Image (cartoon, rainbow, N blue to C red; front, side, top):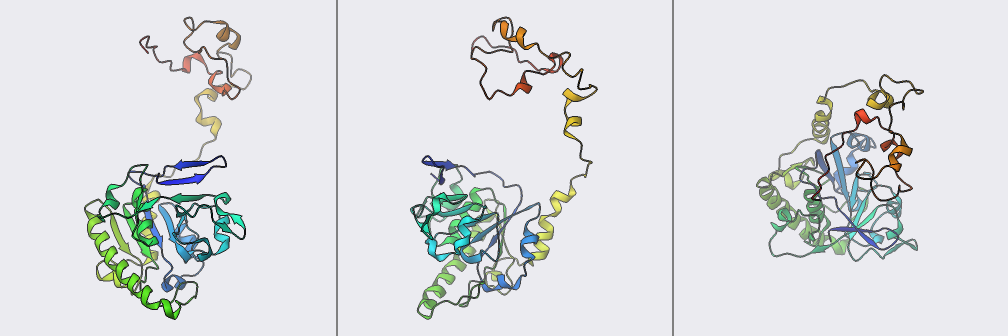
Length: 312
């Protein structure tokens, strides 16, 4: 299955797949340029019209709507696991512990099933609820697949420097890892080049919000503040209307006083003394304990009773 979690009584599926996310997506990566933004970056992205994702150590600089990381628990800030936003880890790591505590018991931890594939384009084809995400041995590629799976149509890359030896949290790549990291950055650049080209054929647009990144050689660059401003314009275009009280929103309450509200309501005693044939409102099963009584105390004149189909 695609995503799953520990519900406290075993593992359960999580279904986030959508045809269209309905807003713009922003993916925050842990490149050094991410440190150039002050604390207001979280205010900027917590706006209507924006869904934010972060990978790896982009947290805690960014507190996203969804965090994704495919490495071991020890690679990340321990406070991450107790954050309330959804966190996606690699399937197989769900039984790991942080500070002696099982991460599967932390809030909103989901495991993603991944597998290697022969064709990269599988990413855009695997959109069903129950899929395995394409595995290219890095978090960035999995994150992009999850975002496409969730219906992202416009994806902005922030902090995606893909060069150098520094990270947004001030850490340095160890000397003996520099060559490996440099090779990985080159591979990710080529992957993003392919993704941008292939994505256009599937209605997915990739945009850079990372200045001085090599990805700007093949992606349009838009400053983050400008891009975020455009993303929040759509919700603002809807007509502003005065909020009304819930009592005024329900026909049941209109033109009635509390004393006369239920004068023409269904008589419960009469209702349950009838047979199914006499009254199409009742069912043969007893009234359940969690029955919403508002479904009974509704004026007959306002009930839309469907015709009974005797063949069913």
